[in-house]
Image 1 (cartoon, rainbow, N blue to C red):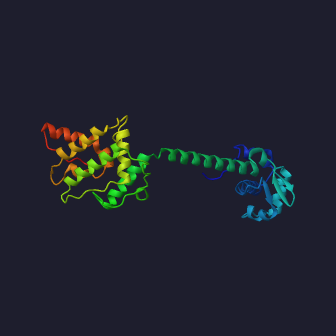
Image 2: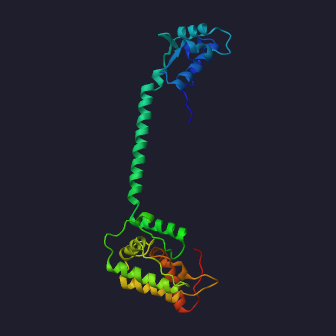
Length: 272
């Protein structure tokens, strides 16, 4: 938004204005714009008179004298002061204080937003992001050493036996499914994802229930026993490249498993 200066609609009819020539009136309006732009608190210097009177036939000093005589300007130090300026406009100190207050308010708002954003970053968010990065970089069944430095995942201090069991079972089923019998490496990211799976259930579902370890094993078996078929080159079992992917895709996988078990239709390829 550009700067503007208030000018009363009755300005042309003011007695003080009517006492001045048209050129003096024009210089007065120009002076309002000047002091607004420069935050000079209504002060016009002698050196600025020539610029304010540009295009006028009368001399700058003559026009200034008209404005002083009419009571629109007053002499001030080595220049002039617009008499009504402070009455209708904030001072430069007021404007500075307002700008500083706005800057401080915006700074606090940015800090609050940054703190709120940081508080929303959970271990699950970090794990999901690291899993996508690892899959895109290394492909399925990656043998890369996916430790916490690579993934940004905080290692579990002491993975439970249930976590290790589910990780081992998934790795074994993926090894059997892989055409070359390649066993994926159980990483810290895997353990973190399985821990979330057992404690929080599937991802992206409101009020999801935790998965008991036996249920997790059974669901892994259901995926590889039921969906280990290809339809136009697509196989749902191929999509399970990590515990995180199982947690993310379970709702879709469950639908495909149910359809396959009913025998109503083969597992369908849906847009991922």
